[in-house]
Length: 328
Image (cartoon, rainbow, N blue to C red):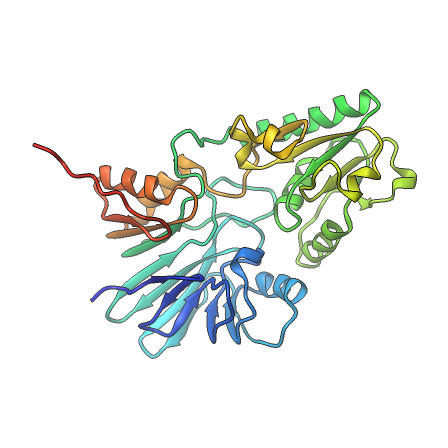
């Protein structure tokens, strides 16, 4: 027997009656992290304590919460146990490791990265029979430069922009990436203002024990000489219109694409990512040593094909597979 995995509005595991990261409400869900594309108002959830805290803020609903610390194994059904391990994506993000008496082990990554960040925990690499992994950057040209190098470039952008009399505006998603960017500005010696949505997430991080550089809530009356941190927004947004002479920078792994500055209509882009890049994806598979790999999101079919070329039994769950037929 092997695991049956149905991909529709998340991942359904009918053999045990649980879902992984459903995008619509279900009875029983294991949630890898608190980004909205992995959340739903499910009746009963298993997640880490940090994810539970973010969920209560972002999706306030009545639910049964099983807050499972990293590394602690608990029974999920009479035949199956669950263990949550750090995924390295954002604070509290988890790899989900299931061990079934008959079906063997299944590891679901959710979003993850092996590169060490400044805010999220270090990603684990457990062994598993079946690996279900996200492959956002599953093509070979997505190779992130060293994070310290990108952090230095971010600080240089801020210094040069301030020296020119403009306001540096760094755009990053409010949960996870914004805190990583803020931590990357430590030692900048320039005051920092943050959008109210980011301020809320910062408070939660600090309550969970994360130390962030000094910053204050955005106030356009005292803006001169400040760096501004906000979520991605178009240049004609009401928020950016409150900033005279803004110079915007988008912070994302997609900055590796030359079209990103044009598509985001920003002045600069910096490839600081909270997802595994292509080398990390390959390394992770080699460390987990699965018998079977199922890929999700991004370039899932491309990466599954790469794994088959490397001798793995691999298929894409989230898009059609184009299987290569050898012609003699």
